[in-house]
Length: 236
DNA sequence: AAACTCGTCAACCGCGAATCC
DNA sequence: AGGATTCGCGGTTGACGAGTT
Image 1: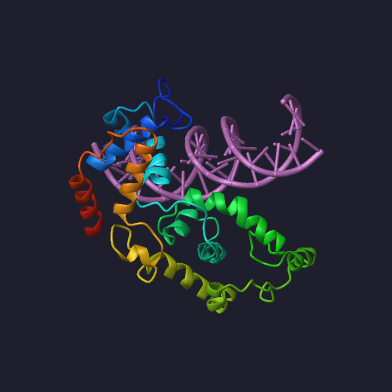
Image 2: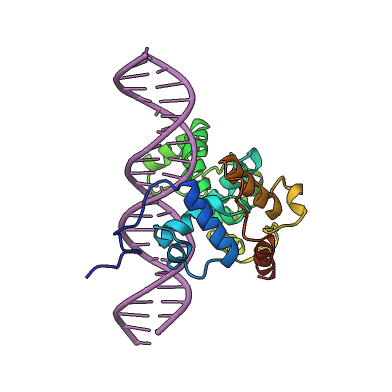
């Protein structure tokens, strides 16, 4: 008896989502929210597994998503955070409003990784490649002498990185003290200060998206429902 | 114009963690 | 307490478009 699959594979559709499926999922979630993902496809009338619905929503359909390539500031932030957190993409994504872990992971693998290698920096350790090679050849030598790349954030915390204990504290701070990172996630004007979309913008983009597809009649069941959800999110 | 290669990114898979009963 | 269920994460895959030969 192995682990149960997340969904019965029979009759479950896989592969790219169609506009029709997107529409069903968006309409359903904006109207009712998602009680549990396993139930969403059934209730929304989709032949998908809950996991697939969750992924589609979080990575593509969520109204607060910011689309397009990461700008230089975001890229730099990703590099800084990766130096401290490693491949914990969801933690990194949490510090970049409107970006998903998948998006950041993809961007890292396709752009940043290559960029760093080109610059002679190991994308895994964030240490200069040559230095690393010398060190690995003389195994067991002290790691304190390693030269870290200096980015605004890593420079500010360079001392912490060199000390295991303070490094631990830095990691904890990243995990626990979210306050100084916190950008508004739902519908406020502050979004525009950061070049981000407000939830209303996002809503309009979704509506435009369906209209582009020739679905002039598409409307979210009511803006009131959407605002109710925003209200709940703001309370949390 | 066709064949091939490469880059990108949406989506899937398997696993561990969290939660439920 | 512990087995079952659900969720979320990170690694990987594969389809597709762009560029090159």
